[in-house]
Amino acid sequence: MERTFIMIKPDGVQRNLTGAIILRFEQKGYKLVGMKLLQISRDLAEKHYAEHVGKPFFEGTVSYITSSPVVAMVWEGKNVVSGAREMMGATNPNSAAAGTIRGTYGLDISRNVIHGSDSTASAEREINLYFTPAELIEYSKNVDRWLSE
Image 1 (tube, helix red, strand yellow):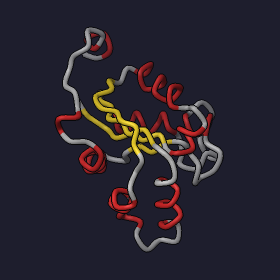
Image 2 (cartoon, rainbow, N blue to C red):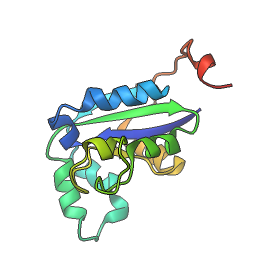
Image 3 (cartoon, rainbow, N blue to C red):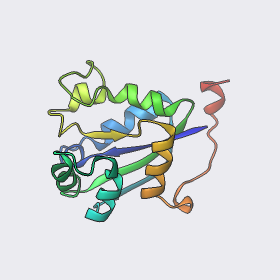
Image 4 (tube, rainbow, N blue to C red):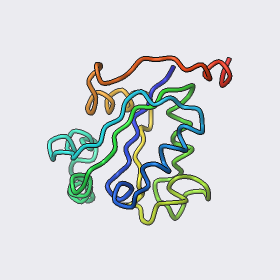
């Protein structure tokens, strides 16, 4: 099974959207294998957004993501990376399809409530930034056999 990293950003936590967002992933049939509420340090934020160093929005992004707690999660499922991206919608909430997480809750491109890995490679990198192997739980759910062959 594939894994992806999902983060409910400070605006999502501050607006009490954590439960509603988690519910969507559960209802889709994905399995939560790791979750924590944390205050991101500047060092971790810089590692997370390393590909954007030097871009005009880098400082604002780091400042924002460290401004309040976030909920970091690892979800598992068949094609979960692409499925989660589809559920989240376009990065800019004004372009996100109605019914997607960003289309429903996002207010601005810099306040779009959620982050999700854009590939299996970035999922692996991001999961390793936020979680140790011991923090990820291996378990089976009886319902899994009903969700996929």
